[in-house]
Length: 75
Image (cartoon, rainbow, N blue to C red; front, top):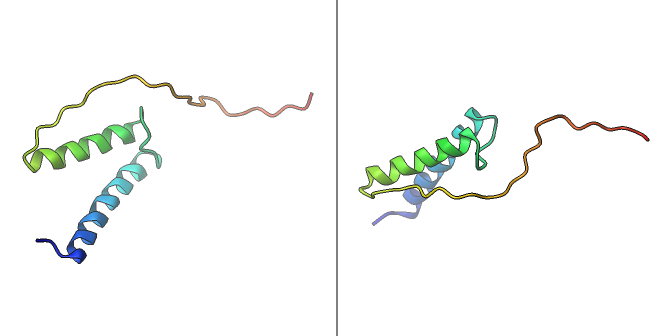
């Protein structure tokens, strides 16, 4: 049985791991970014170590990504 303090400590450990992943990836863990891939790998590794068999099902989704700086013009 886990104590509440131990559960909080473990949760904080994982939250810090996700923050470290974001920090290492331009503060981003969004889908289609390297931060997402690193987050996925982190979770898979934890589950695999716990004895789970994990798979990743690919899926398509629509999203918008701004690739250039905005331009403001007065017309």
